[in-house]
Each structure stands twice: as structure tokens, then as C-alpha cells.
Image 1 (tube, rainbow over the protein chains, first blue to last red):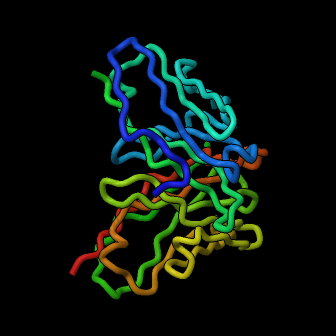
Image 2 (image 1 turned 45 degrees about the horizontal axis):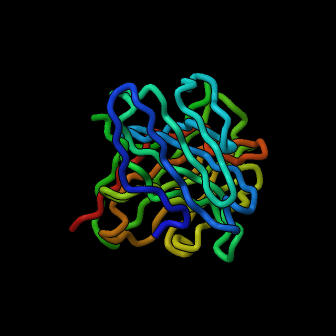
Amino acid sequence: QSVLTQPPSVSGAPGQRVTISCTGSSSNIGAGYGVHWYQHLPGTAPKLLIYGSNNRPSGVPDRFSGSKSGTSASLAITGLQAEDEADYYCQSYDNSLSASNVFGGGTKLTVL
Amino acid sequence: EVQLVQSGAEVKKPGESLKISCKGSGYIFSNYWIGWVRQMPGKGLEWMGIIYPGDSDTRYSPSFQGQVTISADKSISTAYLQWSSLKASDTAMYFCARQSTDNWKHFDYWGQGTLVTVSS
């Protein structure tokens, strides 16, 4: 069971907007640590989409955006495209007894 | 251009040892933490541990402490992940990733992954 909780799957039609949630606790997201989002296509390296909760690396389309509130964070994808179909993971740091980087369980995005 | 290039796929038997590598280029290798991430078949990403090649300071996820060894040779810009006695449950894809030096500590560059298959 992951420290950060994500929905197993989300879906949307081309052009639509979808959001993926990432729920943590007071020892990770709620403690003020940044939340980062990665896109992962099978057989490839994960790709950084959002860092520090709402910052986009250069080259990432502005269709991708992130937000954070309290102990949760969200990734929003607007103008959904077929190429967005992938697994998405949130990641943060946890300062509990098992202090370490932690990933969410991942969310499979299906473009209908 | 920053690159992390991992060693090739491995097929091993239970009980055998293994050391896989991750070679960095395009940046000062010693100055960035390198992390290792596991993805078991059909499962999500799991953070295993991280090393600072500059002084070999190493941190492990409690789930992997004692199960693997992370090391680095800064003279050849290479980090390693090793097992002394593999189990079938070690079958997975393993990624290395560079951690950023800003306050956010995200993983900004990733290796292509090394598939490890452990089967008798």
C-alpha cells in the first residue's frame, strides 16, 4: 500500500479535461514537501511533468498543470490527446520513521 | 546533454549475484544524488534508495534496506545497484534517476531502465 494514494484509473475523451488526485498526510504533502508528477509509458523511462507541485519543466506542454492543497495534490490535463494515454505517478518526500522519497501507486489514463 | 545510460538486460538464477550500472554524462556526476527505482511486472514505481557520488552518502528505503547495495564510482561517473543473492521476486525493471539540486528534489533525468529476470 502506497503512502501516497492515487485512483487506479481515469479516462476521458479527446479534448476533455481530466484530473488525477494524490492524497498524502501530514508527514509528506501536508508537511510542505513538493509534489512531483511523472508520465510513464511502458518500456520507456518515466518523464518529469510537474515539479514543486505546480512547475513545468521546459518542453512540457501547458496542457499539464499541478496544484496542491493541504495533504493532497492534483494533476490536470486539458485538451486530452491520444498520446496522453499513459501511467501517471505522483512523488514526494515523507519525514516519518521511514523517511524517504515516496511514490503514489500510479494512475492509468485511458483516452477514449 | 544530460544522459543516464544503464547496463543491459540480465537473466539470472535464484541465488546468483548481480550488479547493474548507471553511467551519467553531460553534467558533474559527483554533485547530484542518484536514486534507484523498481517497477515489478504490472506494478507501480517504488523508490529503493539514493546515493551522493561525491562522498558515497547512501540512504535506503526501509523496504529495501539490507536487500540491495547501492554504490558509486565518481571517477567513472557510474552508480551501481547490486544483489548478493537474487530471488525470483527481484524480477523487475530498475531505473536510475538524477535528483535535482534545487529545493524540490525531484528526479529530473532518468535512465532507460534495466530489466532483471530471475528464474530457475
